[in-house]
Image 1 (tube, helix red, strand yellow):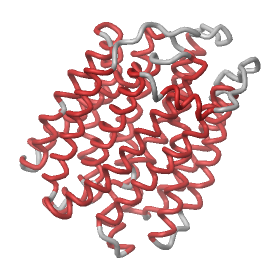
Image 2 (image 1 turned 180 degrees about the vertical axis):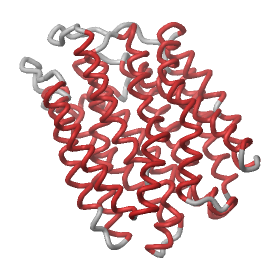
Image 3 (image 1 turned 90 degrees about the vertical axis):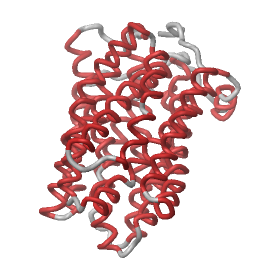
Image 4 (image 1 turned 180 degrees about the horizontal axis):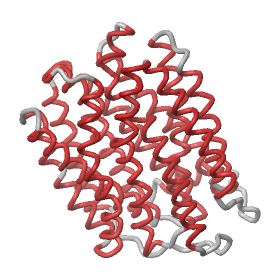
Length: 399
């Protein structure tokens, strides 16, 4: 652990709480349009395939903006970007409420993607800076459980608010939460400004060096594939549930809530298990196992069978995500961690952007079964690449 950070449990608790809140907000923002797609399609007169560009544009802007932020956060610290990103998020959420066309909504979502990418990169980097690798898995598990807390609480509440007061009100709530998190990070999160860290005059050279390492390239490629696979099936699942079973947005959100309950418990467990069995093993087992329930989603009936399959999907995703993100924080030293995780997020978001476009084509031409087959293929390739290219890191220098 960096010496400048205090070792007290209370301070560590506030750090975990703050980062949990930041990632929860970013996760809700990333997912909240999923159950609202059928309604947005009717309001703006656009097809589900066209609305998929909301997610592709969001992901692409996150990818590009991350490349600029990563090296600067290595020099200036993560906290300044967390605070600035939350403030910008609050303002942009207010602007999103004014969208009167698909084009304006797309523009605002592109901006939100850039901000969410910054928040995600700096959250993971701060965990890597603050906690030692040998117990980083359980901390990462707690913080990443915010992703599934978003499924349990954020998405159902957002859908309920949208159904009763309109989808624009959802962004007013998001803006308010972001403002509260700005205050929390100002009052409780220790500053990590790096006064003595040398300036990186050529950040693109740093990225080039990262792209020459076998482990780092393997980890980046894995993120590209599995992130794309996850958002491919998630983006169109609400349209599938609406068309096949006639579910309303709140009912779709309930499905997300039920399957998220197990995942929010599994994520901290995955962190503990990763610290004991190695992150690499936990990822390979859970990611490969994910293929089976993915292929079964469109083959089961509504009710308990569907919820069971989606529950298994969420468990596997929880285990693999915690293991992989913890492993990735250990592949590089603290001096370049922000750059690497920014590049990781860039690959992840580019994978999402490309996969959602392809999945939209699959959905239009082959139905949701084509989408899940595509997602399962990307997932399998992710396991193959990590198995052959990425080794378990030792505790990195500079911790």
